[in-house]
Length: 357
Image 1: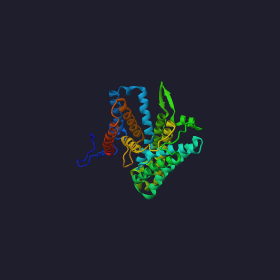
Image 2 (image 1 turned 180 degrees about the vertical axis):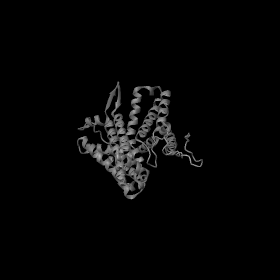
Image 3 (image 1 turned 45 degrees about the vertical axis):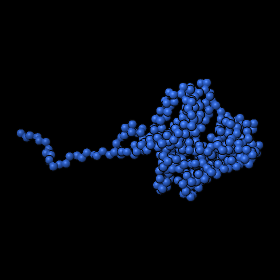
Image 4 (image 1 turned 90 degrees about the vertical axis):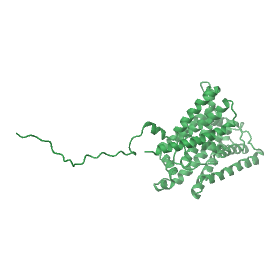
């Protein structure tokens, strides 16, 4: 009778090796993924700011107050979006604030002095704004100088030209009113009208802002150009080595800032009928602050359009919330400074979370 025996296993035979865990491929928790998002810090800050002013300022709770907050945020946010894209691409523009005024002055003076339809001035202003952006971008890529120096020079040129040209044509520091010129009513409906929602008048810039934000988000996350922006901001040499058109990308981003300056300039012009030539100085820092609060790094290659939207919303809440709380408005700039420093620290932490295995 034969007894079946199991095959013998040599005691020296090695056991099947267990594959080592690779931190690069192991799934991260939802909390870790959310923490790595560039706008998460701004979102937390926005909720905290809203709850704070909701509690301390009773007018802040009204629907009309929210409309005012959104309006302040939209005017800032429309410019913060292209500035954020430019910062993700590794550059920033110190002439963005006065470029808004340049656009409005160009449209006003061109239309009034030549007695033309205001739409002609609008088109000329668009060309001028895009040309300023293209000039900044072209000079940057051709010379290799830092964008700080180039756009600081543009800032000074535009600031002086705004005042000098306005005085030359109007003998004043403000433009003449164009409210009675052909095409003004139609342009006002496009750039500065209001839409009633539930009995509350909401400025049309709020809706433009949201549409532009959706477009910028799609551009960054769903298009080849968005990949070029991140690659160029991360390392332009590496990006160029893999075929990214760095020159085109940077010039296009500066022209995007010019397009934003044109749009906001048209809103200002058709909201007030006239433009002060000294306006806009210092606003470039507010645009940059909104982008930084929203998660953009000054070193480039990191950030989001949604973050810039949240940063601008925080700006709107603070600027209006201080008024509704009957506080001294001088605290506004101090608050922005605190928010900027906190945003920088939060962004540093988020960046480290994103690179941890």
